[in-house]
Length: 121
Image (cartoon, rainbow, N blue to C red; front, side, top):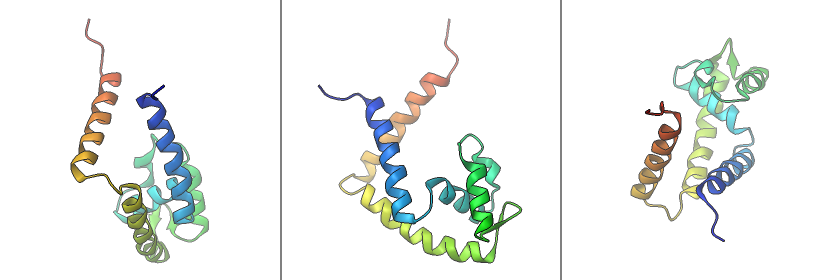
Protein backbone atom coordinates (compact mmCIF):
# COMPACT_ATOMS: atom_id res chain seq x y z
CA UNK A 1 0.00 0.00 0.00
CA UNK A 2 1.29 3.44 -0.90
CA UNK A 3 1.87 5.71 2.06
CA UNK A 4 -0.05 8.99 2.32
CA UNK A 5 1.33 12.52 2.58
CA UNK A 6 1.12 12.61 6.39
CA UNK A 7 3.50 9.68 6.59
CA UNK A 8 6.03 11.33 4.27
CA UNK A 9 5.81 14.73 5.96
CA UNK A 10 6.43 13.20 9.41
CA UNK A 11 9.09 10.85 8.06
CA UNK A 12 10.95 13.69 6.35
CA UNK A 13 10.78 15.82 9.51
CA UNK A 14 12.24 12.96 11.58
CA UNK A 15 14.97 12.21 9.03
CA UNK A 16 15.83 15.91 8.65
CA UNK A 17 16.11 16.32 12.42
CA UNK A 18 18.46 13.37 12.84
CA UNK A 19 20.56 13.95 9.72
CA UNK A 20 20.89 17.66 10.45
CA UNK A 21 22.01 17.01 14.03
CA UNK A 22 24.72 14.70 12.65
CA UNK A 23 25.80 16.99 9.81
CA UNK A 24 25.89 20.19 11.85
CA UNK A 25 27.03 18.71 15.16
CA UNK A 26 24.30 20.75 16.80
CA UNK A 27 20.53 20.50 16.92
CA UNK A 28 18.32 21.76 14.14
CA UNK A 29 16.70 24.17 16.62
CA UNK A 30 20.09 25.50 17.72
CA UNK A 31 20.90 26.22 14.08
CA UNK A 32 17.56 27.97 13.58
CA UNK A 33 18.15 30.17 16.64
CA UNK A 34 21.76 30.94 15.67
CA UNK A 35 20.78 31.73 12.08
CA UNK A 36 17.88 33.92 13.23
CA UNK A 37 20.20 35.84 15.56
CA UNK A 38 22.84 36.17 12.81
CA UNK A 39 20.25 37.92 10.66
CA UNK A 40 19.43 40.43 13.38
CA UNK A 41 16.21 38.90 14.68
CA UNK A 42 15.45 37.79 18.22
CA UNK A 43 15.07 34.09 19.05
CA UNK A 44 11.53 34.76 20.31
CA UNK A 45 10.50 35.01 16.65
CA UNK A 46 10.78 31.22 16.66
CA UNK A 47 8.31 30.97 19.55
CA UNK A 48 5.86 28.69 17.69
CA UNK A 49 8.55 25.98 17.65
CA UNK A 50 9.40 23.78 20.60
CA UNK A 51 12.90 23.70 22.03
CA UNK A 52 13.77 27.36 21.43
CA UNK A 53 14.52 28.10 25.10
CA UNK A 54 16.78 25.07 25.33
CA UNK A 55 18.57 26.09 22.13
CA UNK A 56 19.11 29.62 23.44
CA UNK A 57 20.53 28.16 26.66
CA UNK A 58 22.90 25.87 24.73
CA UNK A 59 24.10 28.66 22.44
CA UNK A 60 24.54 31.01 25.39
CA UNK A 61 26.58 28.35 27.23
CA UNK A 62 28.83 28.08 24.13
CA UNK A 63 29.31 31.85 24.15
CA UNK A 64 27.54 32.27 20.81
CA UNK A 65 24.63 34.27 22.23
CA UNK A 66 24.42 36.86 24.99
CA UNK A 67 21.03 38.27 25.97
CA UNK A 68 19.55 36.68 22.86
CA UNK A 69 21.99 38.46 20.53
CA UNK A 70 24.78 36.86 18.56
CA UNK A 71 28.33 37.36 19.81
CA UNK A 72 31.51 37.62 17.74
CA UNK A 73 32.23 33.97 18.53
CA UNK A 74 28.68 33.18 17.40
CA UNK A 75 29.22 35.02 14.11
CA UNK A 76 32.37 33.02 13.43
CA UNK A 77 30.56 29.77 14.25
CA UNK A 78 27.61 30.83 12.07
CA UNK A 79 29.84 31.29 9.01
CA UNK A 80 31.38 27.84 9.42
CA UNK A 81 28.08 26.10 10.19
CA UNK A 82 26.31 27.88 7.31
CA UNK A 83 28.73 26.12 4.94
CA UNK A 84 27.69 22.76 6.43
CA UNK A 85 24.03 23.75 6.08
CA UNK A 86 24.61 24.49 2.39
CA UNK A 87 26.15 21.06 1.86
CA UNK A 88 23.31 19.46 3.81
CA UNK A 89 20.66 21.23 1.73
CA UNK A 90 22.36 20.20 -1.51
CA UNK A 91 22.42 16.59 -0.32
CA UNK A 92 18.77 16.68 0.78
CA UNK A 93 17.68 18.26 -2.50
CA UNK A 94 19.71 16.06 -4.84
CA UNK A 95 17.56 15.07 -7.80
CA UNK A 96 14.86 17.64 -6.98
CA UNK A 97 14.53 20.50 -9.45
CA UNK A 98 14.00 24.04 -8.18
CA UNK A 99 10.52 23.94 -9.75
CA UNK A 100 9.65 20.68 -7.96
CA UNK A 101 10.86 22.15 -4.67
CA UNK A 102 8.78 25.33 -5.12
CA UNK A 103 5.73 23.27 -6.07
CA UNK A 104 6.11 21.01 -3.04
CA UNK A 105 6.47 23.95 -0.66
CA UNK A 106 3.46 25.66 -2.26
CA UNK A 107 1.29 22.53 -1.97
CA UNK A 108 2.26 22.01 1.69
CA UNK A 109 1.60 25.69 2.47
CA UNK A 110 -1.84 25.53 0.85
CA UNK A 111 -2.72 22.34 2.71
CA UNK A 112 -1.69 23.96 6.00
CA UNK A 113 -3.73 27.05 5.12
CA UNK A 114 -6.74 24.84 4.35
CA UNK A 115 -6.55 23.34 7.82
CA UNK A 116 -5.95 26.58 9.71
CA UNK A 117 -8.37 28.87 7.86
CA UNK A 118 -11.82 29.39 9.37
CA UNK A 119 -14.35 26.91 8.02
CA UNK A 120 -17.05 28.55 5.89
CA UNK A 121 -20.59 27.78 6.98
